[in-house]
Length: 282
Image (cartoon, helix red, strand yellow):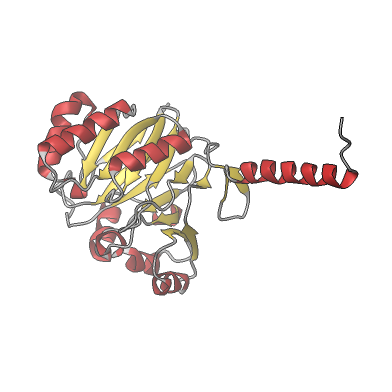
């Protein structure tokens, strides 16, 4: 039997250690505080309340509708503003009428760079500066610098990232238009909130399922306004096969596509628009 030198043995051991360490690191991500967390260990929130504060469809006639999207995710001890609509006046007016406590908003998550999702941000920061803002890493440097001038910490999102206990980002997805979705993990499963779902709503739900497990609800813009009925039927079936229990499409989904989801999902279709409030409890 050939003898193995000590130096060769040491080189083999080092190579094995490097391979094992590389495999371990590939399953982790850094959160904004610099702590290493497993993306599959998102955790969950006991209760969540989601208020649609900006959309182009009215749910509450006392509010104002305008093209764009924003919602407030109320958690146990803080709130997250997801997207900011197209203008600050409509955003702030709707939030005030819906009784949103802006002092509890500690984080803002922006899905993508389009103005109908970021247009209300700086008006909001005039009222509530110093928050942490999570943006896809592809956002322009000028945008990040301006946000930082309001005393905000800007966190650039590339891969899947745990934002806080029970809340994560899918990470930046897509090629032409880069976008992230928000994942809120509840005892009933994950709620996936999309701005426009430019990378494809099915792709974003698949990513969310990899990160958090079962998906309970998909909410937001599905970007299907120009899609044919057969395309929408296929997407609805794919979401159903992925185990999605409820769908709540709005914004850029399109009325025809919403009608298809309403037909196929039946009682599992959730009607939303400006003024809608969704609550998930154990």
